[in-house]
Image (cartoon, rainbow, N blue to C red):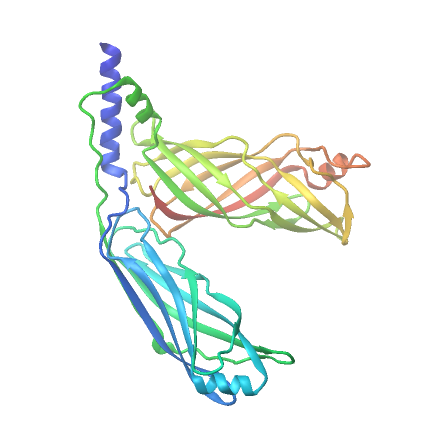
Amino acid sequence: MTQTRSRRAAVAALGLALVAAAPAPATTAVATAATRGGTSTCQAGGPVEVPVSFSATFAETVAQGANVPVSDAAVTIVVPAAAVDALRDSGGTSVDASAAVELSVAQQAGTQELTVTGLSTSEIPLPADGELRITLPGRVPPIAAGAGPVTVSLTSLAPKLVVRGETLHADLACTTDPAANGELARVAVTAPAAPPIPDVVVPEVAAAVAEAPLLTAKFLVDGTSHIAKMGSDLVLEQGTFDAGLFTGDVPNTIRIEGDLNLPKSSSYFVAFRFMPVTSDVELPQDGKATGTADISGGLFTPTIDMTIRVNLVVSNVKQDGVPIAVGPDCRTVSPLVIPMKGQTSLVPGSKSTMESTFDIPAFSGCGVSEDLDPLLTGLISGPGNRMTTTLTAQGVG
C-alpha cells in the first residue's frame, strides 16, 4: 500500500510539473497561403521586366513551444515571351534558375533571420513560343513558437537567371525589387495545454511516466576550440543538442540528460610554427551528457551545470598537403571531459554562450605502417584547452 501511494505521489508531482511547463503539439487551424512579389529587371537583349514572387502556406494558430507549420514554399519567376525570343535569338537553348530568399521572424523574445533553402534548378528548355514560367520549390527552416504572435516577413528576394547554349553561358544580371519585401504571415500562439493527471495509477504506467522527461529542449550548437599546444583554433561545424529535462532531486532543480551530435569538421594548424597540418576531426559522444539545472530564476532561463564527454577522432591528416597514414582508429585513449556551466535560455531563437577548459588525453591507434601515437600526443595532447560553445534555442517539445 505504501509503495502504491509513493508511486501515485510521484506521478501526481510529475503531472503538476508538466502542467506548468510542457508544451502541447501544434494546434491545427486553417492554413493561409501568403504571397509577396515584385518586378526584377533582367538583361535579355536589353532590360526586361521579369515578375518574381515568393509564396508559402502558414498555419493560422500554433501552440507555444511547437514549430509553426509551413508548407508549399516556392519562388515563381515569369520570363516574358519577348525575352524568351531574345534569348533564343542569341543562341540560348536553356536556362538555369535560382533564388535567394531571406525571411525575418519576429516574436516577443526578439527577431530571427532565416534563409529559405532549395530554390534552384538547371537546364530548363526555352519554349518554342510564349513565356517561360519557372517554379522553384524551397524549404523554410523550423520556426519555434515562443510567447506571443509570430510575424514572418520577406526581407529579400533575389532571382538569378543564367542562359545556356552551345557556345553561350551568360548571367542575365537580374536585380532585386525592394517593393517585394514586407509581412507574409502573422501566426497566433496559444498557451500549451496541460496533460491530465491519472486518477488510478497502474505501476507499469507510473514507471514509464517516471522515465519520461518533462521537456525536451532542442538547440543548435556552434563551437570553437582553442588547442593550447598548437596555439590554434578549431571551428566546429554546426551540430545539435537535444536535452531531456527530468524532475530534480531537490526543489527548484531539474536533471539533464542530453544527446550531442556534431558533424565532421576540418582543421588547419601550423605545427612547430612552420609546418601546415590539416585533418578531419570528429567528436562522437561518449554516453549522454549529464548534469543539473537551477530553475529558481524560471524554467525557461535555467542555470546549468553539465558535463559532456566526447572522443577525439582524427583522420585524413596531411602535412603540407602530403597524406600521413594515421589509419581509421586514431583517437584519444579516453574521452575529453568538457564542463559546461552558465545561464541558458529555452526561448526560441535566443543564444547562450559558455566557456569551458578541458584536457586532451594521449592518442592511441594512430599509424598504419608506423606508430604515430607519440607524434599526435606530442603535438596535441595536454591541459589548458578552451572551448567556446554557443547554444541557439530551437524550442521545447
